[in-house]
Image 1: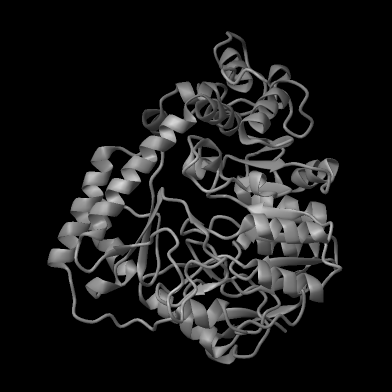
Image 2: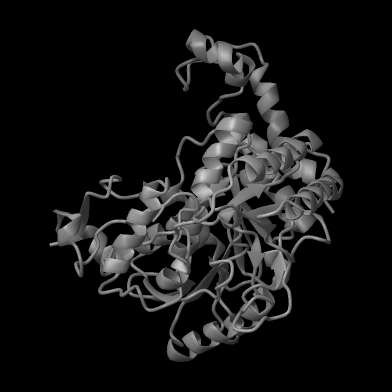
Amino acid sequence: MLNQNQTPLLDALKANATRPHAPFYTPGHKLGKGISQPLADLFGKAVFRADLTELADLDNLFSPQGVIQEAQQLAAEAFGASQTWFLVNGSTCGIEAAILATCGTGDKIILPRNVHSSAIAGLILSGAIPIFLNPEYDPVLDIAHSITPNALQSALQQHPDAKAVLTVYPTYYGVCGDLSAIANITHQYNIPLLVDEAHGAHFTFHPKLPTPALVAGADLTVQSIHKVLGAMTQASMLHIQGNRIDCDRISKALQLVQSTSPSYLLLASLDAARQQMALHGKMLMSRALQLANEARTKINQIPGLSVLQIPIPPYQGGLRGSLGFVALDETRLTVTVSGLGLTGFEADEILDEKFAVTAEFASLQHLTFIISLGNTLADIEQLVQGFTTLAKEYRRTNLNVKSHIWQNLFTTQCHTLCCSPREAFFAVSEILPLTQTNKRICAEIVCPYPPGIPVLMPGEVITKPILEYLQQIQAMGGFISGCNDTSLKTFKVVK
């Protein structure tokens, strides 16, 4: 057992930041002495003293042999991995590296169609061929959940030459599928299971949270420590266990997608966040769960609102309680607002502007909130009061939203891949008006953000339902990212 009280990287950074010396190395602000005054006024100068480069005492991220290596070993033990890598380019680079390390050009990888855009980037970089599975769909909530074990079994029977399986656990809504069964099926084909666990880094630290991906049998998992724990934005980790994945390939792949000038502020925040959770994680998560339970109970009592709950027995014509939804991260609060006659985008704007309550993201019928170790009882009281007033003063009679919109896009055969994402991305392309793009092959990533799930990706055929969906999202206040023209007046297509 390692001493989880230690913070080797943080300690080394502090020692170098406070050591009197003449700096003749990057960065140019030289321990904050050259930083602009407005920036110093906002952050204070202490943070810039610690904004250091790869000095001898601070180790090297791409070839760690000192304090970074020690910090990563402590993290591996704390999170239950055999080896851990620190990431300074977010979970995005971890997902990209996972695909690059397991798949080459022309190799098949099985993954859900509602993956994050980072997985599409991994397909483009690697040249891998996606075998998409439609996620399970909840027709009452109009939410896509996880892929099911049965769907994966069928895909592997049809594509036994697949090199890897990638899944999302939990979803942006906090929903977890049957990852243990998915891992068992994947391993029957002796291939690795890769998990986008960006929103599940806290699972390890409390028994009332869903089973961590590594415990469920994942070979590799990528976690955004900054999203739900105490690290700085962009600071993430990649963990592996077992021998199905070559560690050297992971290291080499990360060198392709990470900066050669990593921020030690981000790296040290990972070291500190790990120590915090290793020592106090259960207490911190107990408090977060208690706050979330209070919010869930009170909001559920407000007429016109409902909160996504843990799985219930299957209902007639529905799928909730089946293998696409076996557990829920109860620190994730998804509130359905359509009962007020409002879209999620409208409710989000009102709560933010009128009541200073800011959600993680809005969708057509829902608002989703992350309740973490940093939230307070005062935050919960403000959230509940905001919803109470919203329901009393902003209720409308009708909601003009097309129902089952996710079903149309991600649980039917709405998407057709004509060539690999890499081929389409690098193909000769042209810009056309939206009205002329129906049935053309897309050459860019197009996705509402958040949550960053691509509605179109390079290689897919543009169809009328997809165009209508994007226009509806935009008209209702959603933001479209990834594409050349975010106004959606034009699209880039393969020529």
